[in-house]
Image (cartoon, rainbow, N blue to C red; front, side, top):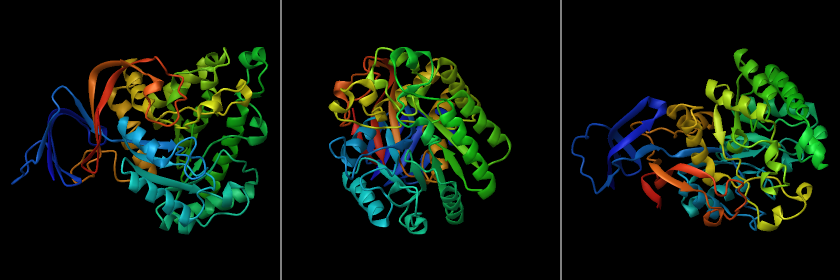
Length: 424
């Protein structure tokens, strides 16, 4: 099928394109941007006048809950929610039940995603068997099945020899290692940033050192092993500076933050709002500003959803007993655009943080609108002002602290490999 998307403002940071032009699609590929290809006849024409045409978003970190936690969400429900938010590629994390530590588990996830048909799912496999931090997983087999990297997630991994061996193994396979930098013994049982707010509320805290101590060890291991390493969900100013320094030293490291960390602080839990219970915890305003600075100067390369859908009961207990996490797929693009609207990032920066940059780190051939690329496309109305309503979320988890927030810019169509998978 041939599709013409005409008169849209095509914004493709990877190729330096930002102009009102036409986009031509043949079957599942983009065949031209601008001039009409010879003998091209459109079966369908989409008038994108006044709208932005950008690459389909790439989310670097989401829990899709399946297998094992289908009461919180399924691959079908969460990829459908992703499509409604312009997301066409998702990196799926391995902490399911059982963990994604075998080729069979990888195949199950990929097959479920293919059957659903809403988004590409790229699996980050378990670094150790069962995520127990003891015996290494068969990374060669995981890569052969299509895993884009390995992770220990937020499960304890205190044996440094195991971590070093894992990084050596991953490096030998050309796999990126995804670390959530947290010293488990310092963070265990905590639910809030160590500071005046947690003290006043009587909450067990997680100190800044839980992140920086872990980063210190992991950066030393990167120096020893040379493994390409991505640090997931930074939350502190000092952590951001440590990653910036490591990058300046030429180490093969990159980093991301969850979108909510660029907008919320420890003050947002002051009324015991369990929707703001996240891990790592919301930090200080100073930390939030430092994370924004990291996005602006490029030392933090990716903004991700850190999507964690929960059933309603998971957020109804007393604050320390609630489960951490935000259902974030449907606010990823609105929050990225708000960083531009608030003059923190240029429009090109904001879009690249959720398209080409995460695609490069994952090593997947998407996140751009270049000729010959898959037609993974998001079309949005940049002038549409709206208020986020958690009750209308397509995710099975409605646990978002952004209920009622005003946003500008609304997805009106999402295309996956040339097929429309969402239309407002």
